Image 1 (cartoon, rainbow, N blue to C red):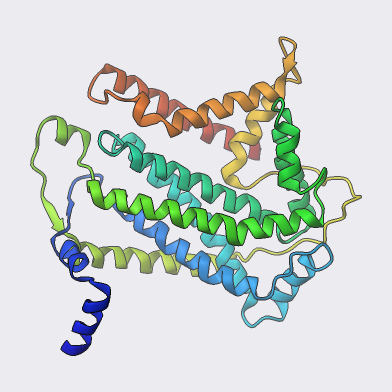
Image 2 (image 1 turned 90 degrees about the vertical axis):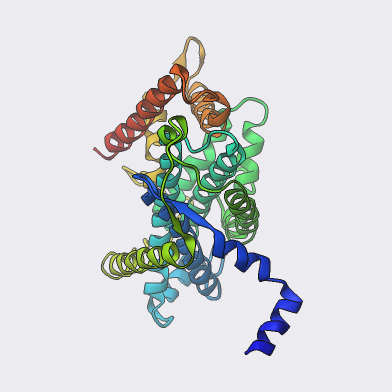
Amino acid sequence: MKALGAWIEDRLGLGPVAAFLAKKEVPCHRHTILYYTGSSILLFLGIQIVTGVLLALYYQPTLAEANASVVRIMTEMPLGWLVRSVHSWSATFMIALVFAHLLGIAFTKAYRKPREATWLTGVLLLGSSLAFGFTGYLLPWDELSLAATKVGTNLPKALPVIGTWLTQVMRAGDDVTGDTITRFFIVHVSVLPLALLAILGVHIFLVQRHGMSAPLEAERDKIKLPWLPFWPNFLLREAGVWFVLLGVLLTVAVFLAPGVGPQADLMAPAPEGIKPEWYFLFMFQTLKLFPARILGLNGELIAMLVMMAGMAAVLFLPFIDDRPFERKGKVITGLAWAGLAYAIGMSIWSLM
């Protein structure tokens, strides 16, 4: 075993990594639970990759076979219905945890100097996760996925100059067709995974580079916090959280397995009452609030610009909230709570 260890060390040089993990410590405070959300995201991402590869072995991204191949996965592939259900629900859990992770960072102001770049990569990871959800929703090629994708890809048209071009790029043409399925599939299984893994690598490096932040009040009052060794103490606790989450995931996947609707008909009208996935509901409801014209301008354009401004504010939050210990920081915290309440309220309203 010593010879094998020496052989591995000579070629991979993992000694410094092991030494770093042996010395790594995690601060203990009332927000420590938020640290578990980061590793749990990695857990669900791993599940997404494994189940996604299994599904890709049987899925056919064509107009004629997309819906039929999903049906075959669920009825002919051994435990195919469970693999698809786990893939679908793990995506939901991962996106929910990314939201929870970022909200925890935002309200504890853990993005403050020198962790601004860590926040930027975290927001980009959220965007990548949402893009995964959007592109994956079309792949079953049933009535609801077709109608929802038409609505979603139609939104950029409101933007001047580049709007129509963006819609055509997303759809691979003027309308949602079989070419759209192929494009969404390529983006879903190739482009987005590469982008997400690259951003994730930078994000993890920055987390290790700057360490885990202490609560705002502890830093302000220079309070010395207790620390927990990462190896093995904190890692064992994380493992316990993972087992609980796996149990919840499998339970939900077994008892609430998603079905697949009838194959989409390009000539059929959109079904009534269509709604996007839960993480897009607040944007969906916001668009419905804006009238067709506002002061002579396109109401949908105004809505798009407002939402884009909100997204930019979230992305650049560390630079906007550059004085978290002062009154400005408290005002921004209040605005953040108001924004969260608005998003929740709009989502609930859209379901009524």
